[in-house]
Image (tube, rainbow, N blue to C red; front, side, top):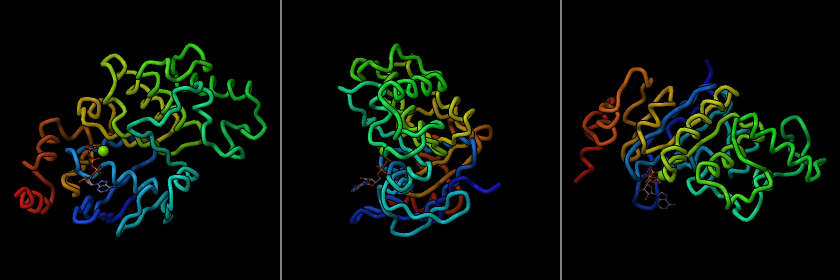
Length: 261
Ligand SMILES: Nc1ncnc2c1ncn2[C@@H]1O[C@H](COP(=O)(O)OP(=O)(O)OP(=O)(O)O)[C@@H](O)[C@H]1O
Ligand SMILES: [Mg+2]
């Protein structure tokens, strides 16, 4: 099977800091990939390269087997890659509907219709339909986002990311700021996305969340990929060991340990 996304040999430095060193990532259709690692391991940087927010120093990106070059998140979005940012980037003073449609070019097709031809009522109907499809429970799409709970906001952010024929949704710490009861809802949403044939990359420090939803888990340590395992063939201990450097695939262990100082 051709990977939906393939990143090959990605390296990136920020001045003296080598954030990523020849990292490979593959993501298959309908797959939920957990991307884990300690703070500063390079997770967000790798995803920002995938969306075109950063340019890699070396390495290539392939989408459905074709080489792509994303100059900006605008480009990756046009090809179906969406990122839900850690800070959500929602406009609190605007309605749920307005947030779903925020910053979209009017000509892009959404859910079979054309946004260009939509008036406010149609937009509300589309937003309602989207939330319904994703089984997101929010009283009214007219509510201002600032009046919603953290979990509901996260749902709107994910809904917004998937409204426009997304193939891949990247979530960077979607559950970090949530109350325990809201976490389950977000994890459920990831399952619903999979049902809709959307592949997901989930970054989380909450390993229990990753183990609950991911098909495969990839571990970064100090910018190096040190593990990639089907979730069914690993466990929390092994993943933690990979994250902190107790174990490692290939020759990476020595290198990572050597940099501890
Ligand atoms: N724009 C930037 N300028 C300079 N250094 C950066 C920049 N972005 C990331 N870095 C550095 O690159 C390394 C990887 O950072 P990154 O944000 O990718 O880590 P992360 O795995 O997402 O960490 P966390 O779990 O804390 O979010 C860090 O050392 C960080 O300081
Ligand atoms: Mg990060």
